[in-house]
Length: 145
Image (cartoon, rainbow, N blue to C red; front, side, top):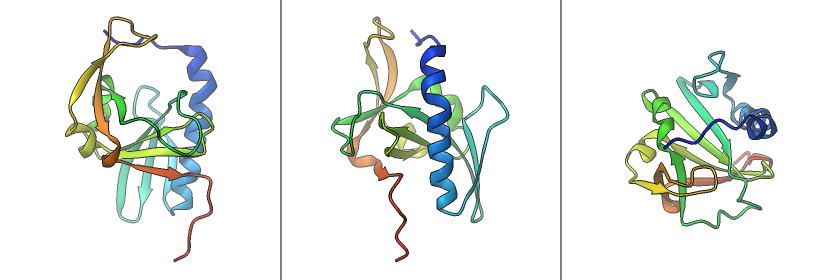
């Protein structure tokens, strides 16, 4: 079963998460725009000879800097965004840190069914071990070294 769209949650987190991701990519020297296709991947990133999409979301149960979960779940329904080069940024609730993982790692990860409050009967997720992605402080100044 798939999670139903939650407009209240989307209104609360979508724009701030996209803004935080845009600022992150731009600080790294990339151009980043919101995808004009409202059903496509969230952001289109280009520069340094590369082009890729970036899907963003907020894990509201993640607070603070440390990612205290053994795995990261990316909904299987988001597989549609992985046919082209893409990264997924999953932010903590405060939008200060993000787990960054590319599509190749996601696609190579096992799929598990997880029951939760949004889908009590269970939804399928890629189950990505914490050792396979990077947690970034997205608000810290970048090092010039």
